[in-house]
Image 1 (cartoon, rainbow, N blue to C red):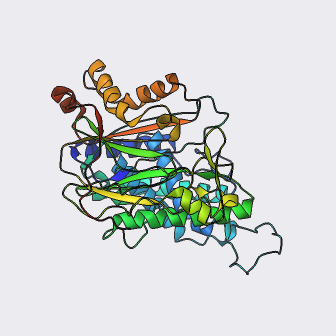
Image 2 (image 1 turned 135 degrees about the horizontal axis):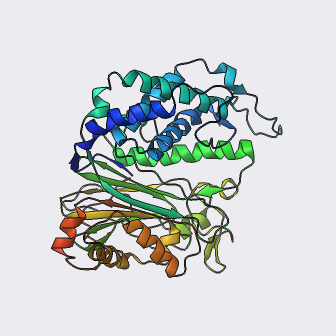
Image 3 (image 1 turned 90 degrees about the vertical axis):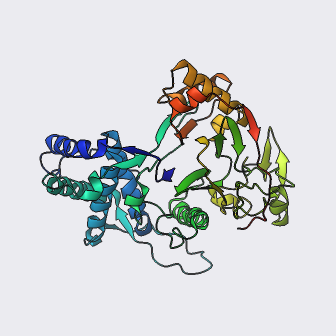
Length: 424
């Protein structure tokens, strides 16, 4: 979830110097070569194309765990990663393992960098930034920001491993050009939905190269929401989903990618009409046209294996499992209550039409406090029998207290009429 936001906060200017002082009190000097890293590095090597995103995610997670104000965290991450990338990284290079010479065509050599060495250098640049900013914090890092109220909760549940990941970037603009494939896409200012689709495609390509290099067979679904001005853009692959609740009505924003999906129709998301996603493609027909098949084995599956028809990765099921995301856009009119983004561990047991009632019930019991609403929704999914990983993120577009005082206008499922031809 990335956005600008509707509710101004004056806390940032007050919190920023205090955070910097606390950081330098905890870390009075850069780490020595023998000191343990204060964060867990995801992997042993990064390819050159992965470095920016991996390091930005690493430092943002670290600063978030220490409750850094979002604008300050974004500015510090931008400063630390930018400075690191301007240095000579050749001493951190690792030789890739030899691959079988059965490639159809020669590929450009892959530059791999030592992940732990990068992380240690990154911390040094972060410390340097905090040391400088203790005297004078840049205006961008201490300016009041307008922020969403976001409630997030995630659990491993009965699975052996936690495989879900989530991220919320309320200060997205301060990370622009650094933290994600979408941010670097030239079409982001003029065509955000197209930039999101291209970012999913780029991420899939990068992961497929990584999977081939490291002999990985895994994959992932994904869903994201981006708010630019008064427009909501969503993009997705697979069966992770996002729904919008507007005046107590659940508005369906998307069609998840399942193998059995047929005879889809456009999901128009706007009144007044603006171009939205292209028509929903029949997934079953697409898979069969490529020579694959869809069969039922406890649920519908692609080639008897995966229960989703689009995903990042899953190299051995390409092209039947597509890496092309769907996107859609909707004009916001000010009466929207909140967005709910969740994985299949939630939506497999909680229908869309139940969402508004569950959230409203929580607000009633908590007298308008929404801080722990995601936790209650996760618990509800578990009570209904979900054994999967469960992640829920609720992004309030209006003050929960206002929603409580106004009450739900109606609880159910709403699908706005289609009134304009879709486009890609």
